[in-house]
Length: 285
Image 1 (cartoon, rainbow, N blue to C red):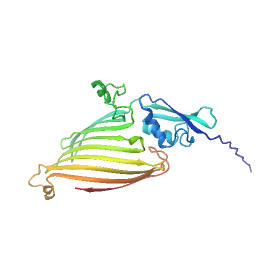
Image 2 (tube, rainbow, N blue to C red):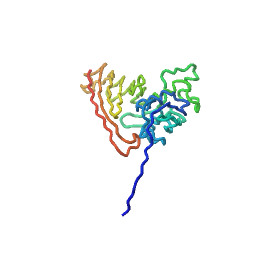
Image 3 (tube, helix red, strand yellow):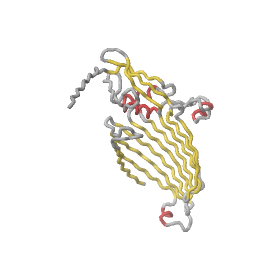
Image 4 (tube, helix red, strand yellow):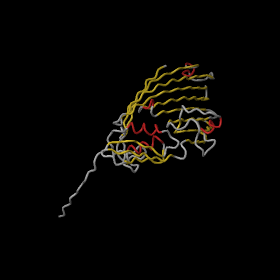
């Protein structure tokens, strides 16, 4: 038999001093710091190597990479002050955080459909353009130069145009992942749909506002409110009675409650853990 002896020498614990962020040439400092704050990675707190490993594999490093939309993010300690180390947050930004997607197709029940989608994952609703050229830069007209307006705050904007021969849909959505700089996401959506059905026409306007609160134990709670106005017109004489009964404008209102948890080791490529979501919606009109 062979005896094996392991000798482990633990390093001293230390608290976080200053937090220095580098590499965020286009993204505001607060976009990175609010992610750190959500994990209690702040000056004066104990330095947690489990979530900040220095090689990009820590949970906090992955979260910074995902929420700040970067190519990579690492957090390493630096300095020689006894009992304290500064935290060096180094990120490499993506070349672009906005893109266009175009397409089209033909379906048996909806006819021909076109699609044009624009999405910006580093939006800033408070940074208004000062000229028409700055406005054009928001949509990548002057690519590869970064946008000169509406940019840098880590918000998400999505605009979708889907015109069709029978069904046309248009939508715009906005997400603020840290409403009032707290771990609460705000989602605002607006959409319209025009559908030329076989025996009637259906036009729908929809608005939605939702909030989701994130907790440190990875639980989430959400609440959302939606309003819809459904207008039924162009009803043929041979349309079903159910359709004739709802001819005209019809308003709907709904409240949705949800709860969920995600304890996977990686949100995009998980190997362990689980995630679940449960929701309930009450609609009336």
